[in-house]
Each structure stands twice: as structure tokens, then as C-alpha cells.
Amino acid sequence: MINEKIQNVLSRLEKDIDYENSHRDEIPREERLNCISKNIGTFYNIMLKSIHAKNILEIGMSVGYSGLWFADAIMSNTQDGRIITIDKEKFKIDNATRNFEEAGVSSLIKIREGEAKKILQDVLNATDILIGHNIKFDFSWLVQCGFTYDKKLHDTMVMEYIMARGIKWGFSLEDCCKRKGVAQKKSELIQPFMTNKTSYERIPWTIVEEYGKQDVESTYQLAMAQLSKLKMNWGDLYE
Image (cartoon, rainbow, N blue to C red; front, side):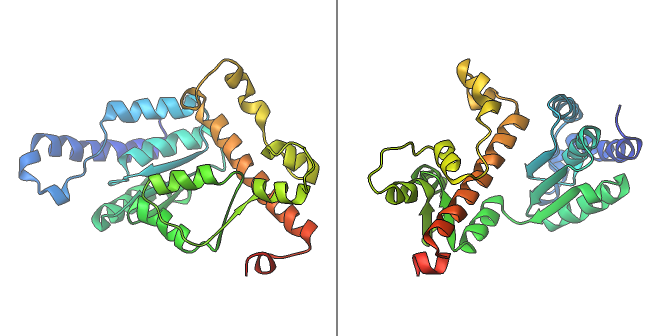
């Protein structure tokens, strides 16, 4: 059952979508909505409800039609979820903003204007130190995807190796966090899937998301614990 206010806006937009589909050649390319179909929207809504999704990143918002299907699912799943949606065309952003307001879901959705890749690149440009555990893998992914970053890197695994001074102990993120007494990975979330040789693509997204977020938090806490042990700050270490 779709939220009534959301359904009213969806129904109105579906008339616009149907008109566009039947008069496509008459509508200038830059003015086309290019929305998903109702069937796909219904599929996403059912899927998101079934996996109890709480947070969604959408790249390519158009006028908010798909976002409304997402919003209905999030509202059914949780009281504190959110959607971040990105688009570069102002007329679509303006239309989507009005549609979200009419449907009563504006507080749930944050609109980012611009190219998705540029937004992440802007974050990298504003970053002074990029932290990771065995960061060469994360950094190589960024490079392969066409991102650039030429400032400081802090590898928590390399730092643990240096601080070990030749002692042979484990350097996995889990081992390092245990030694430093900081928040540990949530390996128990994915261990059953790993045991069954299930790829990450087939693990429920909510589990992958929670596991990933904890990895980030654990790595950050480990980096701060290393600075504390060294009695240094970032300036002392890298200036």
C-alpha cells in the first residue's frame, strides 16, 4: 500500500510520463523527463521494503518519480532514513523539489546539484588526509575510476607495522583494532555469506552497508589511536 500523498503525486507524474512516451519525437531532448516506468518503480518499492532499506543514494533524479517510490519504501522501513539524490539539470531539480514538497517527503530527501563524479571529486579536493587500512586497494580503485588525489595518505596498516618494531603480530583491521581497544569490524555480519562463498553483490545491501560503515568508523578510530600513542597530531606527523 503506497502512502496516499505520494500516490497522488505519482499518479499525476504518470500522466506526464505517458504523454512523453507517446509524443517523444515532439519533445526536445533537454526537456524530456526520462523517468523509470511504473512497473520498475513498483519493483524498486517492493525490493526496498523487503530488504528494510534505510538509506539510498540515487544518481539521476529527473523530476523525482523514482525518488517517490524510494521515499514510500523508506518511510515504511524506518523513522530516520534518508535519500540523497543527484541531478545536474536545474529544471528537473526545481520540478522534483515541488513534487517532494507536495508528497510530504522533503525532509527525507537531500538533493545534490551537479555531476555525481564531480561531487565526489570535490570531496577529494577538499580532503587533506585520506585514511585507509591497506589503502593502496582503495586508492587504486579511485584512480581506475578516473578520480585524482595528490595529497597525503595515511595507511593504518603500514603505521601498525612501523609501530610493531619487528614484533610479529596480525595486521588485519580486526587485529589492529583489538590491540588498540577501539571499535571493531562487524565481521559476524558477513561471515555466514563468506562461508557459503556468496559474493558481495548477492549479500543483502543493508548488511553490506552496515558492515562498510563500521569498517570506516573502525579505521578512523584506529588512526586516532595511533596518533594518541605517538603523542602527535596530523600536523606533527605529516607537515
